[in-house]
Image (cartoon, each protein chain N blue to C red):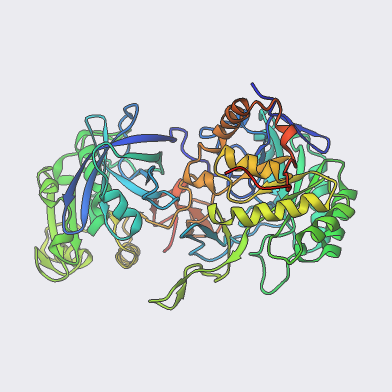
Length: 280
Length: 309
């Protein structure tokens, strides 16, 4: 029975800053009562306001950055819960549950370059992933910048959250928008195909993807067709985030490494899954 | 310090706070949030004879005042529970209740007899009421005779205390409670989720794939209180209250209405550390009120006159 991560706790934290980001997003900085050790990118936290302005059930948010003992979350306003978080002021109290989930695998240098495919708010788990790959994390030593490439797509330029800061990280960043308002006109999968044809990327890349469902389905199809290693960071409805409510099932591959059980729990077995483990 | 200990039939609990089935895992998954020693007991997610993969997603949806779920009793079956879960709760510093579910009366009895042999299990809770299973099949909890039959089979299969978890989706829950008592239940849990539904009108879609779902959380507390009170008046065995409990005040409302213990469920999704704090808050409330033992308040509802403003 998958259990919550042993380092996960439930605590009250204080909002230190809310900064607008993109057309409909904010960067929400939160100070926990005690600093947390460095956390693997793509792990997440459940968040809600403690003053009753949020829905009663907290919602999952990927950790965007860790800096100065603070946790930073990139929040896209889509409904009541995210509106309440975006309306926080410095000093607002949040219920925080985490860190949760597994995070990206070690980005090692033992294969083709890593290509990160981000769709809109799906860029959130990639900022720290790039930082950690460049400095080394876990069993993986520091990776040279040429082994990393971010393909950042969105429907329009206003949903390319925090793009300038991504571009300052020192890795290659290519941009795609559906409406052509910035960068390549099209989606990240088409952009990847174009890079392959133009020789801008080798064929044996390893893929990491986070974004809307249609994009993840397309990435999965592409990875299977080309037999590429691929990890997807998923977002599901979650009731608890800690493996208890069974509300976030992800279909597993019957022959895959997760075993024969038909569902994995996105919250405790993910949110990052390899395409060997699951099939969307 | 007030005396928080209670007795459920032959079972002594350190305090009246139990987890509600399906909101706390099968074993000790929540131990880092709400340590076992802070709880009177842990009630497992429903265990069935055969593995059940559960329902199609979406399975959950939050509404204005509560939470809808239709998980479909996803679990790996009694074999995996006996093999993988029970050894890990052997040394748990709390009471372990195993919640069992079945599709026919004989399945409940079979599960009970398999669990009877296991010392890790202190008591059984019989899920007569989960509204999610099957098509148009009526739950056992809608008919006193059916409830009695299931509980009699369970009673004959085990010497452990057995509790019948009832559904609020009936006209007279007291009659169902009496049926369970007649079948040999040592107590009843009132209540399971209310049947509910939510609609995304723009897309003409149900919010939950199976359309109907179990409604829980703050919004159901008045219904749950009424059900628990009705059960307490109908039977002589202890009643365990369940539905919308999120604070020690809520716990005492159920106790005064006639409950010997109370389960906390959906509130654990808002904060998984909350269940573990309730006993301490309960102690504070009783101390402040000058009540020596929580047992003094069980069923102390005074219907004469008006409550002071």
